[in-house]
Length: 327
Image (cartoon, rainbow, N blue to C red; front, side, top):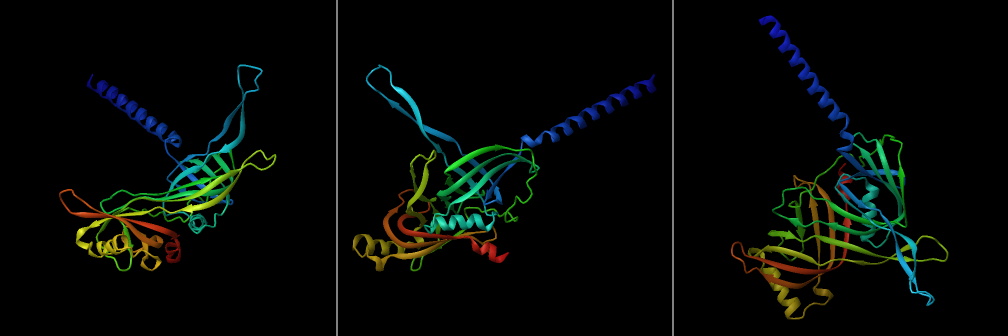
């Protein structure tokens, strides 16, 4: 009897283990819809992985006509409009992508053809959104914060003249990693330098968003709008620092704002450098030109006393080349 019971228990245990193994294998087979990849392709070459991506829709304005012969207005739609794409990217992209951003900061407004490729966890392509004549509209550098511990990403928005969504046959995407060596950036890893000012105790710099104004032109009988770049907008630089290093800042504020010494000769230049986790490698350098102080506020809160200064910036340049030169 005891022998029969042992055989039954052994059989039940074997069945349970087989069921568990089957469940795990089934979950592994279905994971392609749980995790995936977004890949940016520019000019027929994959430039790297995107952290997130959104947008790419199409719309048209609803127009209406009232001819006076009927109580109801006649409605129809106008020309198609293609919405911008917004993507969060890190520092593992290939050089052509960063050149596109640098050109935007320089006012060159380079147009790009390409695609956003959606792939499963094994880089089998699921679908793609192809685009033509795209211009960068915005680039945002997230806030630099000395207390930050999580990785952050650049946000880049670009507007195409035409977008088409194309299904895929599941072809494997091979050269998907761009620069291959993915590099995380934590917002606490930064260095601000402005000659004549003590920047060693800067604790925070608010997010920086550079905008390229883009207008849509309706040309002749063309079905789609043509887009054209106009002017660049550079934001103010908002900086928080300890009052322990504020003497040169307050002196500049007194001269520039109060005493009226605010001509070109009294403006400054500077650099904001985004650094790798070991603080040895430059991931990006933002050059700042035509800096002028427009506001200085002292914190009235208890605790560590700080001041917040706001600087206008006439022009910025961004350079990612240090990471490529080292490689």
